[in-house]
Length: 240
Image (cartoon, rainbow, N blue to C red; front, side, top):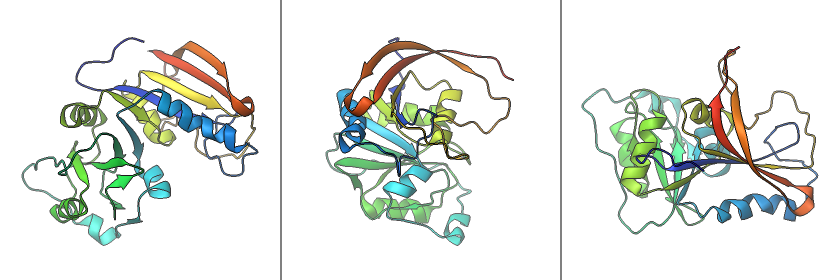
């Protein structure tokens, strides 16, 4: 694998999908051992951290949401400093949350320290709330998170060298579109989902999104007929 720029981590987009590319696994006829392959492969990369978008964190990890009135109170003053919570943290869970919608009661997800990745518009009150919960945060981008800047800060502030991108289709697509994905690791389950309108491994907002060429690095058959595919991101294709 070619090395990414030195000021950001190596990023592996790691997902499990059905044969038709869907990623919502509820109801899939897949054994516990088949499902477990996702975590087994994740651990095999020995990453320093993983990152998800707000929707994935909301559905699976955060303890609540802030109200619209709280989110509407935005900061318009001078830039503020990033915050790293006191203590020794060996691994991290980064939550991309531009507007500061997630409410955290804990700063830990299965031993990984929670770090909120926010835009500059979030209020001082929300930053104080995070500090009070022991949640670290990074400020990157004026109204939306600047993913390139966020990765530089993840590298510089937290020393992350290998980062697993394990979000929904939109953040995966945004990272790929910005040239921030080095490898794609997909566990293809022997399942046809068929639910129209559900998220895919990569989703783009634009109708004319470019195509991407991937270079196959490895194929491996794992438990319960799950197929592990590893690709190097090779080049961007032409827009429609």
